[in-house]
Length: 133
Image (cartoon, one colour):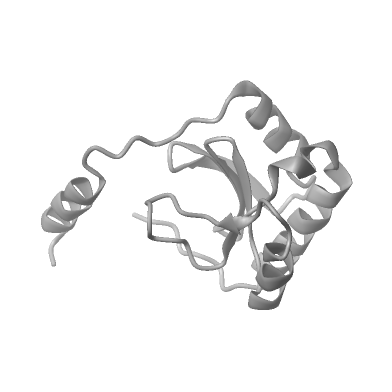
């Protein structure tokens, strides 16, 4: 498949898709929780903002939802908590490895930081992503 047909396919798959934007409170919370680590970069993703390590996304905000990338075991553990779910930027198409953190945890920054640290630790062990040309 050439790049122009891939672009058309992607555009048609996303036609009419309204990407939720984070409010100021969610952006401020995200920024306050990004680990202070030289390996971490922050950049736009899905029209929102995410944190990356070695080019791999490990933490982000989508709409007003905070999400992390986790091992299968940690995903199962986190999913036991009410309010957590798989990240689904496209309805019915969950992203493998990414789990939304419960909104009720916003009042518990240390709990959020603990899960974000787990995400950073695991994601930093993944093979580095090559930069797109």
